[in-house]
Length: 340
Image 1 (cartoon, one colour):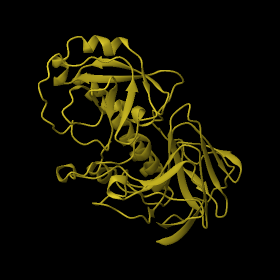
Image 2: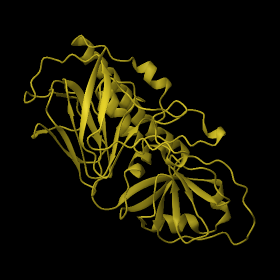
Image 3: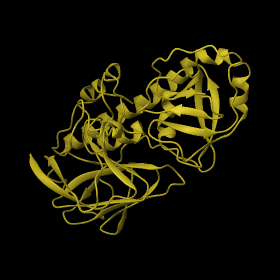
């Protein structure tokens, strides 16, 4: 194991340490947290031979750039971005061997997603809160990194004997998320609260909603038509899943994210399909969303297909890397900690 320094030369609007979130902490009042786009974060780690839940960097807008002091194995995933190594174009969603001293620069386009992820083979030195590097600003655990900062990486990577401009080393079955221009469609499963608001199912199905600048890590606040319950019966606050569609007293729709807490007494009319959560994690201000009602079984099948694609990638990466004499975590170990 070798310690390698990564010098940050740019961090864009906001770059933080990130992972897939905390386990079993919500009963203690601490949200799961973790990467907004869990799929992109997990795939980035898999592509460099890490476990899915390893610590990596999440960039929210602008550019993130770093220079390694030794050769490293790196991957960039998430929103559409222009990736360069030493000024030369490089592929996203692919393992990249970055030679010592060359700058990796990731420039994202906010028109097609808001977050990019940078994973590097090995273990990044980062603080943890309840077993996770995921930020939680409300608890004073910001995890922000800044330009000029030097990150430390423990890695066993020794190189694949490849040059930067040679063809890609591997042809891997990477399940790349496509972020279309224009309006995004999100599948939603009805929740019990839909019974309390007559006509809300039809209204949501026919409407287009816009993500507002008031959105944050707790949830997306959407401008668009809503209805409210006819009576004033108090709803007891309770835990809600990630992706819950909540209607507060104001005329807006909220899609709760990974840092949500309780319902605060508001009705929950639906829950976004798990397969669509990465899309919601990439939705920024101005993004237009439409919701399509689906059933639970269809939602689970779609998520199972995506999960199967990641498992196939894990196995392909393991076979390819081990053929080059480079050990990677077994997929079974990754699945135990899978929070996607």
